[in-house]
Amino acid sequence: MTDRATRVPAVVAGFRERFGTAPRVFSAPGRVNLIGEHTDYNDGFVLPMAIAERTYVAAAPRSDDTVRVYSRELKKDRSFKLSDAWARRGKWLDYIEGVARALAARGVNVRGADVYVTSEVPLGAGLSSSAALELALGLAFNTLGGGDLTPRDLALVGRAAENEFVGVRSGAMDQLASALGREGHALFIDCRSLEVTPVRLPLDDVRFVICDTGVRHSHASNGYNERRDECQRALALLQRAGRAVQSLREVGVEELDALQRILPEPLVRRVRHVVRENARTSAAVDALKRGHLAAFGRLMNGSHASLRDDYEVSAPELDFAVALAQREPGVIGARMTGGGFGGSAVVLVDGADVENLFESLARGFTEKFGRAPGLRLAMASDGVREEPTAGA
Ligand code: ADP
Ligand code: MG
Image (tube, rainbow, N blue to C red):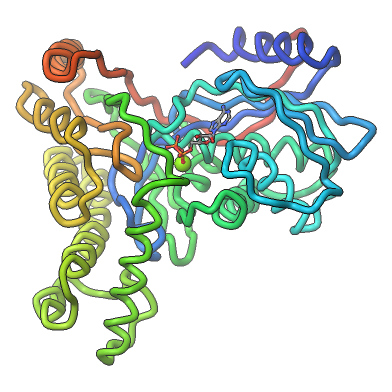
């Protein structure tokens, strides 16, 4: 997290150094999901918040149809021509090209551009650097091309880029959070209707802490799509057994016992996670609205156990950090966050105990794994925007 007033000039300077011209600058936040994991692609409920860490895209039009892009994180310079046929590369450029082509498919006049990307959101840490990139880039291409897509439209473009071009069959949570984040609020999202409801966070006395285990996943190449397949197979079995359901979201908690006769292992546990996680997420929003933080924390703890045991997407480093946090004074709840297989945990803690929690996590994690975790406070922030560059 850096001050906007110093950040934007640095991005402009980085662009100038590479491309020699003056860019416009766009940014979009990463997100931390507070509860509702692996429910988005099952048409269920999620509760993310956009965070202060952002991805910045500086861009200026070119006279040809080449998109040339530099990533400061990867220290790589790549380009493609919009007029060439598309082919998946299996690399980060797929995100860039995916956004450009998904926008063009929606009628935006995407033009050649020089693009400079830099991110405060760590890559592959479960904080959605991919959606932050898609949204900042989407707004950049849309604006340079004179398009009129809304942040919500851009979220769906980002999802299409990820689904169709990168090949990660993600739901819409990350992109909607990065598009529509609001300072001081989490977003309750119904992933069937895509209705987004800001929920004020009662953060006077408590804080959300993010603990990045440093274990890096790439959703383009891991068990994420496998879990999605399992959910689809489970749904097909339920339909074949005569259940009139279009998605796992329509399965009720009270039906779970009966499903044991229909679904084999591990599908029965996958469905149990999704169904209970939806119920937990609805209950969590209720708890927030009533200011019942202890109840919210218990739901976070339940979510972690379910992701670890039933959905099996946690990792030893995540389980360790969560268990350690849950024993510390002032901790109200803790869970892994994001798609899993590494990445980050999120902890709800009394404000007075934040310092102790940082110290305990740093010490305990380092003793166990020989390296320090990344620790930061999560600040609920605004979504995608163009940054003013006057004077930069
Ligand atoms: P997460 O979204 O949790 O960070 P993903 O695997 O979904 O993890 O997305 C990470 C991928 O997104 C990276 O491996 C890279 O391909 C791409 N990416 C994100 N940010 C950048 C960036 N600043 N520069 C280049 N590629 C990026
Ligand atoms: Mg991602």
